Image 1 (cartoon, rainbow, N blue to C red):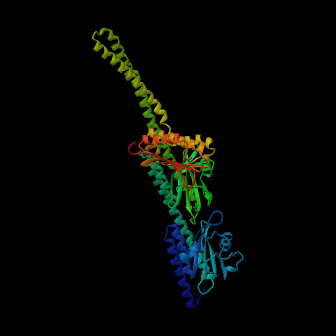
Image 2 (image 1 turned 180 degrees about the vertical axis):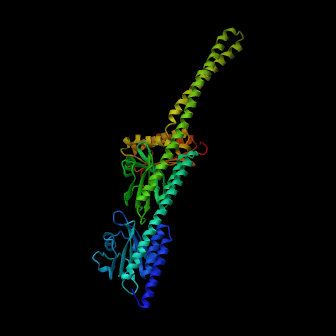
Image 3 (image 1 turned 60 degrees about the vertical axis):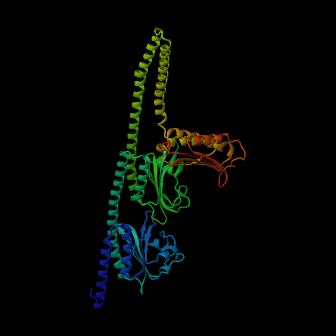
Length: 533
């Protein structure tokens, strides 16, 4: 084809521009950077004022929308990014190039939201990756003219290169995610097998899960008794939902089914009230669930992120199970040693002491000196007392073995379960801190007794419809029981409350009972852990 010299120079210049644009797009490996670079170089290539790349979701909506040309303050005033309706969805439904003199006159146009700048000329082309429509490249407001066939040809060429660049970025991201997932799982396994406590490992698992999928908030909930208890939560600026979840809710369904699930916006408002989530993902984690969420307007979780987090959760679950088996083996070893010690005490020590006592007792009649005879009888009595103490110790070895098999967390939840029939509803609970490792056994027993008394008072006297229980074990062990009932009676009978105060004083702590800020009553029982741990 022969062109006048000026036309040939123009074509050569634009072709060189296309080659430069292809090189700029192909040089990136980060997917988000690639998408923004595609929009930027396309706008420069055809002299468009505005450009955007929309990523098509599986349901035909726009999962992402990456615009360029808009002032950031103006973009914030416009509000949420489009979802692929109207003219933007036209190319999703019919993925062929589309040029318009005035986009407002197209039958699919739905107009612009408030604060949106006016736009007229329009050019849109699909971006294909492996034959599938990955997204749409939108261009508007060509400076001084309409988009022409040459613009369309150039943008189609750029879109072909963009598809290759996107595929390369996807492959690079997948390899990076696999490396991060393997490294995270190895770190958790190493931490567990090196003897780290379970709470520390759960915090590490939460941190790595958040990094893997780029979540803003999340929780790890483990099954305790008949509840899913939120053990770990993360997310800056969000209310930490540490506490309980019933097995009847959507998270419980994931645990029972053993299958991951992606929740749409608004599905988990009970976890993060008032927080606008774009989507959330729940993954089974052995006898628990890991939930991660993204704030709006972040893109929803995709299939590759579900797969990645599922694989990580499977490896983390194996590590947790192995650690639990190791702890069980260590506990059984301790129990075996206790059994052996008990048998030795009974078969050897007690029998010898008993025989010695019998010999001394038989020798008493042969002793003529009264003082010596009295001392021998006293020695026999001391041996009898020693035998009784050893028998008590043998019993305690076996008895503690049974009692210590149940953690303080489980025992707390059992107390709450037992209070539900008398209250008429299930109390809510928030447990934080190292309850199973930080709280001594005797202090835990006092805590359970105090909780029973507080719940009993709420059931008998408060006429409450809600009871919140908060247990915190850090420098101090604090139990807070708050109800929405009638409040504490003035000058009423306080024997139960006095008992709670006496238990606190016995452990060097304090107890207060007062009316709640919003009504009802608030009981606070606090004892130090530093001196008793």
